[in-house]
Length: 608
Image 1 (cartoon, rainbow, N blue to C red):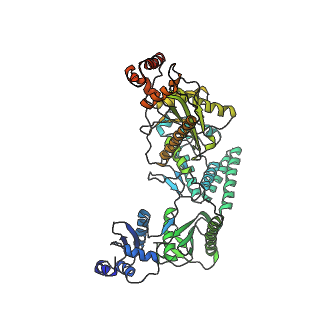
Image 2: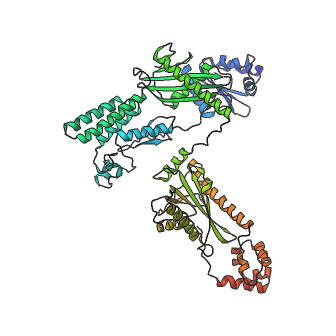
Image 3: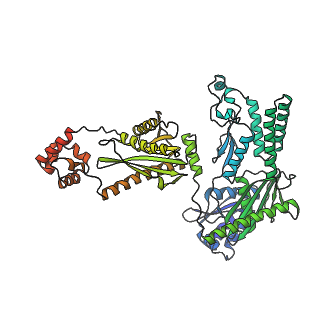
């Protein structure tokens, strides 16, 4: 759009706060911006000469302008932020952060469970986080387990089920990690009180938790329950030590958000410290890529709203290094000159500088980033398949045959979501005559886990059988003969409809086709299929397989090759009539072939 073309539409733009959107000739969204006065802000793009190539390129591509009027500048900013995240326009600030953060969830159910998740759902549950480190979340959950007894099972603990005595206490009860609500040994009121302590702990408010345990210890002492009182005292000491390690600033500051920024040409780095009850409970550094020469103020404003929304912060005070033309209702923006807040800001600035130095060191040393963490996908598989343990070790089996004969099997191994090729195995089937997928699968599975059992090695958490119920049941028979029931979970993956079968289940499980968990399972299946085919090719190139037709008395190599060239496989040759064979190799040889196959016991072929 030229300046002349813009002048024709400029009078139609409102002189009010809002957002504006630039589109190119094919309707692609190029840029979203906010403004106190839409007409003035948009006009500025066409009334001055830009030194920035990107801005010049943006203006040249603009073919259509749309706008939305809002009540205040704050509303405009929030709408701009929402649209940028939704559409990711090419000329807007590029947020370099694609992680899925972990949460701690307290489920909305009878006797709520508390566990780690990476999916924040609108299911009525209460979510705490997100946390920037999954290790920190696991430490926090372990800390809760050490101090507050909660159930870890997924039993439906409804009043009716408990009253009917459908459940029995497990090992966690006998270890003292659970009070046994499944057998009505703990009331819902008492359990909810424990949940309240968990909420206080997750909010960083440890004093009410400590006071609760002090009262509990006092009650045990009055009842002469000295062993229980001693156990509670240990929990109090544990909490006080945890609090001592956590406090790094003055406890007079209950809720603060601290931000700092470093800008280097078109790249900016923003650090965020979340301070709650005198402790830094979250820290995060973001990399922002400026597209249109945005100022430090604009980049920091964008990051403040983005990070507060990501981490669900409702702090009433924000500590900043520079002044921003930005307002949040009931929130104070502070630029400290001295004192504890200034020290916090300096700490945030140290974090930014450390982050930048680390990036430069990696670039100088040409360090390659680590492979993507597959833990979220493995957790999704665990959840989708309802596995007891995280499937960090997965194995998959597949059968193959060569021209209808000579079956072989292959097994691939994935650890932590990636191929572990040193653990791949192939099997020349030794005990099966003819083509019998079920028996071949049983032999391969039996040989694999007989060896692991004999060597005392660990078993996979998940075993995928490429095939339907028949192959799955055959694999299960091998596991039962080895007395390894419960050592691993077996699932069958049907080839046609990409559905999963469990041993003994009538109904299949169909995962969303584009879900990360299904994609990884299909990738493992494709890997074992390709590995099996490669094994076949290598065997053929070495001449290992002898054509079954050559075993027929009177049939030589040339005749066998001619038959395979015509009918494509031994199986197809078996299915031909005497006349059809005679047309290719003559009457006498056709009789030899028919007599050979008609006299042999044909294995049954199942469609699974």
